[in-house]
Length: 451
Length: 102
Image 1 (cartoon, each protein chain N blue to C red):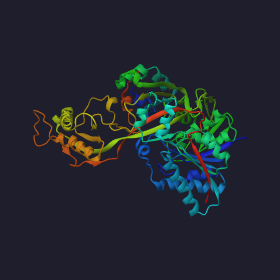
Image 2: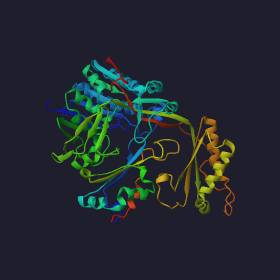
Image 3: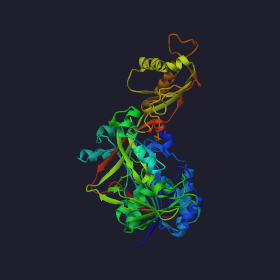
Image 4: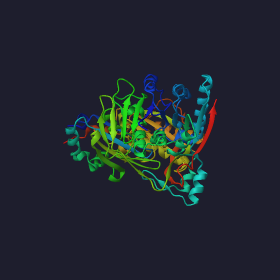
């Protein structure tokens, strides 16, 4: 092993279409593997809870088609992580279907396709809890309880490198993974080729968001990582981007609480002593990373559960006296809803744009805008109740009784007197790490030949 | 001098589903050192600015390779819950703009 080169065209495949030109330029460099992640928890709990993708299938197909055709033409293995936004079994199956369709449409010669499923049923997690397994809360959460599972519709386990290495070992040319750790899908081919874990996981950490580690800011452009033991060199494939020591170091902080440590399945990547050096104007070399293996294996679980049906309504205010007393208006409407529905069994939220609609409890400005927009959000077990609560929460603002207010023909501007049926409300119920015997035991690998 | 005039990047973003992380990057070593020494940008200063108890600050670090101050706040509830207002946590940094850097 002298060096291994990984090309990545996008940090979230299908979320916005990848830029084909810099990907082609990257393929011309002859990479050893092409790797891309396709999922995120940033998109909120709804896609996982409802098991729906949030990206159009046309965009997913666009990205997968460009990558598959190039990889099969050059005989380069291709690894996709967290298929179809959620990494659920649906996501894996839908990507497998897209791969099959593209292969058939272009008459590709046969290749080995691996898919790795990562969905775990809440009952399976419950069984393990009852058998004494610890499921440790992350980011300050308490440990997982059966009550949390009662509120959970769907769970995915986040795979590390092990199942992907097994797929490569079995001869897979294309690997579609369910939910997976972003750095691990890059680390897997490197580990499989004998690279040390520190180098492999650092390469994954720096490459996972593709062109976000370069400057100036551009999304969906390809980046090439050249990896040697103890050293990762990153180079953007768009001619107007540069990977500088500053841009690469800055990326270590992105979307993480700390730039010094990255928890990956199987251990912790230590970046405290990383050195970032310019190779030339466009390439940056990073060295000095370390890796501490975890003694007892754990697998991160993500889960979401439905809170109820959800409706929205939009109401405006312009009377300066009413604007100044907006809390009295909200109290009036809330009391009316409570008089009919009580205080429990539903949720009624007021988002007051023009005051603190964006920042809520973190808002520090004491000013009010000259007009306010209030979004009413009602959540209840069924659609009819959610709609009625939202309608009442909105329309009662029109009838608020504010002594002394001069406008006596209605205290609110209804943008339109209607309730909008929104997506059901979901909540992240699981953000935990489950103790396991074997880091691969929650994942199921299937191999097949296409076509 | 206001932070908006001293820093080159001021941003916020989710760090997982329970946390929002804030990055303040500086264009020069001098600006970075000045900001690091400013009480209004210390851990306590950040808690005062956002009017939150210090326990709400999950972590606070300075990061020399990127000339950055970075702190992470706990969300009141997980991202995307009913009643939540910034799915990606991407617009929570505005109060930092007007911090007077001494």
